[in-house]
Length: 184
Image 1 (cartoon, rainbow, N blue to C red):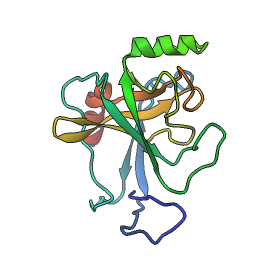
Image 2 (cartoon, rainbow, N blue to C red):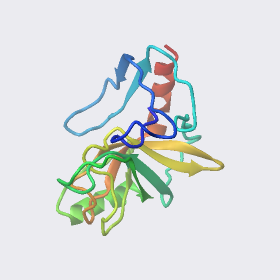
Image 3 (cartoon, rainbow, N blue to C red):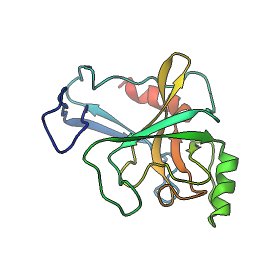
């Protein structure tokens, strides 16, 4: 946690490692459709927050975030079949509604069902997107005066291709499951 540049240990704030005690994968996860693509980790030891390790809030209410700017980050490929960066990358993408997202995929030649458990973000002309290796990373948005985890990077077809937005697990649909798991 707290890593930024994989190529050096000489960062202003050090990363922290923890051993994982429990991996709680969603019991309905479907590897074919990526529905219910969410897991929570419990560490043996607590995590102390520091400037490069901070908590993120869960969204309040049931916002769809359509039209909002989301930020996704990770160390995934810089472009399809491209190199992996040493420094964490971040890109901003607009949230689009799922019906429009399905229509965009159809225009690109794919028939994809994107139920409400997903949230889509991207541009019609592509150019900005998460990519292979970013899966599991955060999609954050500003809600009122704080930042929230709106989604978790799940799947896409290609990287930053026209009419092929990124598809993320929608956290608001899993808030009850998350709250049940974290009480243990």
